[in-house]
Length: 347
Image 1 (cartoon, rainbow, N blue to C red):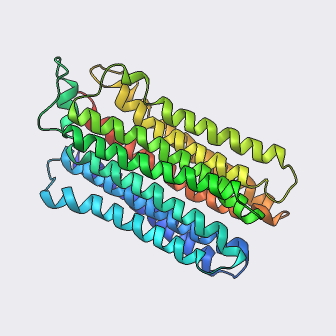
Image 2 (cartoon, rainbow, N blue to C red):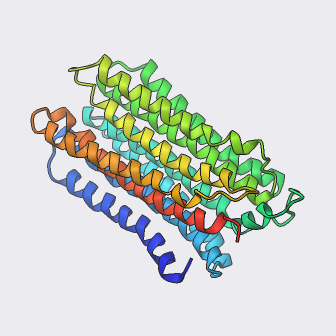
């Protein structure tokens, strides 16, 4: 990877973050209707995920180009966790409004903070990413003493697992004890967010275990099924919400769940790549980055149709705007998987 390309791959997450922040703020401040007060904050805080993805990209790229410093090692993951914490706090502030419009954006923004924390953990796991090609080329498949210790590896995976468990409990609680449509909508979307967090367990585990050298050949056929399955769960739930509630006020939630499924499948591209190039050559490795490109385009095509539908049915205002933010996340994930393909393959 030359220096110019490294700048491009680091710029993509920042541009996508800027898009989410600016577009979200524009929607948020353009009116006081419930749909704008819902879509605006959600799109805006999708930018936090893009920032966390930037810290992951910068962590890996600076190791590849030989400019990784001790300050980078601690500063970049800290930035991700800072945005995660700030996003959760802002979600709590929105919920504290105690208004009917605040239920959905408040809970969803908190959920986006949970995803941001998981991505920041992926950045933390990537602080020794440069060891992966070395470990992959080691025919003895022994644990690298320069990699993470067993306790550090378990801690990283545990952090994402706990966050995912919180998201699932949160989603189930909202759905089980909901007494109105707003809590049902928030619970369904939180369930999709939980699927994304669970998908990130596979990514963090794959990176941490390959850095340590404890990643086994059996795991090459296991981990990538986690994000693929979570994407299928969110996609199936989305279709169920659309067709079982056809014509009802909550059917639009199905499109949001489908968008979250596309994010899960975008994450799967990184897990698949790490698995396919571990101790072997994979001729199609350079083609894997096309997966998040396809999911990003799918999000934007869906958004285009829903923009038209929203002209006749206002309930589609939120998913049409939010899907644009999801497309930004998927395109950001394209830069990450491209970086992984460049940095983790055998030299």
